[in-house]
Image 1 (cartoon, rainbow, N blue to C red):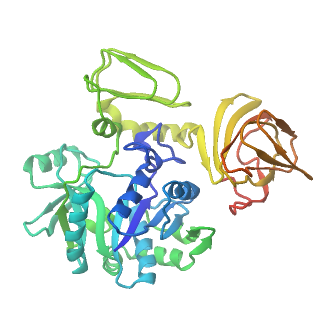
Image 2: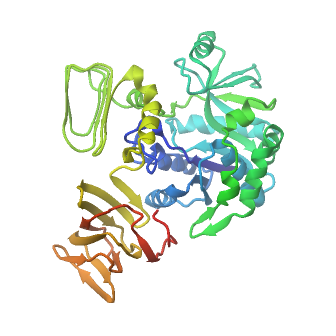
Image 3: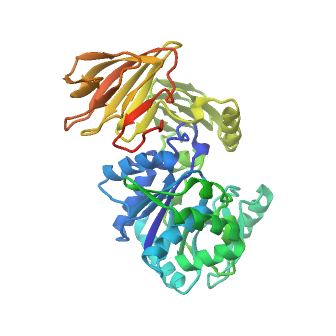
Length: 466
């Protein structure tokens, strides 16, 4: 079996915790690890081997770092230059798998799902393997608990052959499906031979497959990654595997799955999944709730105090606060789209940003100053660079820093500092075996990430701000 993890989603329905640069699959929502890490470890526990990971280019180092945290390696990490939904991602995975094994049996998994019962999952996969090897496209159905319009609905006959596959029906249709008792939710997990899914895609959407073949033909190694050709992959139609194949194929087969599945797709789903107090509230972080019922409160930072609130979602992050009634939460995509039209930075990145060398967190930002907390992992180094519009003061608060400043190279210990004037070529490195933490105080007229001119970079990002 050839596991494939699709990790390219944006997770806008869990804003403001989930952002474009840190989507929900990389957040710790169900355990002390991220959903992506939980997915990788499920594969290991099932003895299925290392996965092929498809992810967005801007998430490449986040994927690598999270794999390193759990001491796992991927079979490969393919970078999508732009998001094109699950259809093209599956086509690329199939092409890659067939290059290694013409008869590869794909197990396609979203990175952001919760599955509590791994033993039940393993039994369902064993069933699916027999059917998929016979040339069917196997999906795993979840018994619906509500008339949710965000899922696909499947009706199969007694033998499991899919009769109806309807992706994201309207509310009335979803209610009819629920009341009939004949339909299952599509879990988004598939098992299929690579050759079978490619053939089905070529019949249903030849333009999409041709674009994927062109993009894959120029797959380029880049450090630990494999990079798709941006021009041809960008020309690929954006299609989900559900619309592109499953609604059209006559070779679909469904296996019911009862394994504690959830996609944690919306804040009410997160509330429903997590432990609650006697009044049905979920409290995360520094929260005080009095006379509240059925609500979700999350605080990353300051105290959140709530009085007399029922069925409310409150998510407090350092730069954005969401307050919403549960029954209005599905409109969050419209809210995020409106913020995007207005050019608001809060939809793009949280204040804590991940980089290949570590993390940086904006502590304070003014018109002519900005303060960051920078953490550099052991043995890692920021690029050799300079800025035109800002100067920087560095204060070491933990560990040892090796500083390059024009022609000078020197070390700084805790409580020591240095000054980097605008226009100075500089670099920061952690030569130690423990994380390095510094406070960076920037002063100047512009603090954008595009005010970086890179000269050397061990991560291959010369000329890039990512």
